[in-house]
Image (cartoon, rainbow, N blue to C red; front, side):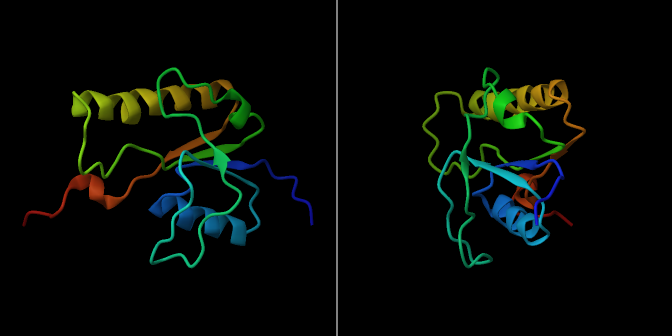
Length: 134
């Protein structure tokens, strides 16, 4: 069966959240462009890594996403700079902002210019830290 539905572009498809999302979209028969800068990895929740990954540009203010966004109806943005345990960046905060803020903003603006109707930003709860105060 060939779907006429526009594909969903998923960034960070090899990450923890991205793998689960892509598996679910595939199970539902949703056309998908699964993007990743890194190869898929095994997780405790997934028995096999995401397949059909497309090489993603760096998440940066000057990255060109136009070709990958063409024809997509939605973007689910799971990619981010996270879990850098031994950061070697001279200014780690500036590096996080360049990727997670400026890079995401550039992607969102290009998605809007490409006619993408829905841009969904996903993150893990870990963004809030290691614990919740009472």
